[in-house]
Image (cartoon, rainbow, N blue to C red; front, side, top):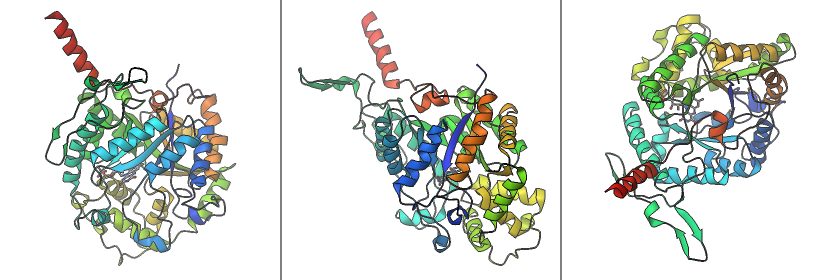
Length: 453
Ligand SMILES: Cc1cc2nc3c(=O)[nH]c(=O)nc-3n(C[C@H](O)[C@H](O)[C@H](O)COP(=O)(O)O)c2cc1C
């Protein structure tokens, strides 16, 4: 069979475009109405998407008066979707900086049980400066410290997920044996940031471990992804940078002793689709006209760790000196690089840059026919830039429907995308191996040794 691509739906409020929430084609449902999430997930599942993803931030954005910056907590949403859907994978963001490994391991293991093996965790270290103030601190934890803590966090959660052997639960009511105590072991972790005894108070989950997703693209972020991630979200405004990222991450994964095909790379793509290119462009323009440049200016400031862009005129071409040095930015370093590359390459005015970022915050944006979108997907997929895409419809659910009705059948005709779900778990959709339990391997080796002595 030819290699097939993977599609994740990135669900974001009423669509990824900054002004989507006001657009007449957007969902009429409220952003705290679970039916909105369930409706979008059902449409993505009907279109055979591999997975649906919910991002998260741990502080309210300052521009909530002019933009919808509120949504339901994502792990809670996954629990609701686990029962309203049956096949699609379920991915939520959770932070290694502002949660305890024991809590997180339990939550995602529970989602994996509830969904029968469809859970995934998008590992973030939380770049938003204001989040620190909601967790007992005033200062943002530095980029380097966040990743150091994240590394130790991973060792602990993996240990917790592996603390029960597959066959630990007996549930023998007649004999009165619920579990084999010798098949459950503590973690006894004592590190720089965490002390966790374990074991987890929940049996091993259906996928062994939830699927691990990551989206940091800085050098440290990439090394982290190469070690831990099984799927990687990434933002690119050009195919060339996506190809370079793809080659680099696959190489790094191999250097970590992993098989490169077990690290799926999914760049973001936000397509506005029309029956003609002119219609798609008209719809994109109409959505752009609803944006407020001052909302974009505040958002840009957040991206650069609170840097003050208030005096920057809207209509003169930008130069890199208008921005702080990305090496000094403690927020999302990779996205600041993406933005600076556009400034160097296209010399946009601030108004033009904000217009571009309004589409999908630095991910690839295009307006065209379903055929043109499918062509781009195939070109990146065959051209070593992607294993699939993180689809970010500008308006939900209208542009998800346009993608499902227009692009998906073309990809299927070209043999690039499934025509039915063949697997039950997210690992099966993504073609990922089930992690072997270190517990079992070690104990089998020990038992073998005992039997020969
Ligand atoms: C598609 C995508 C989704 C992301 N979702 C989140 C998120 O939900 N919460 C968050 O704090 N960061 C999110 N990020 C940011 C990254 O996880 C990462 O924290 C950020 O890029 C900073 O890390 P870096 O400096 O290594 O790039 C996302 C990035 C991408 C590309």
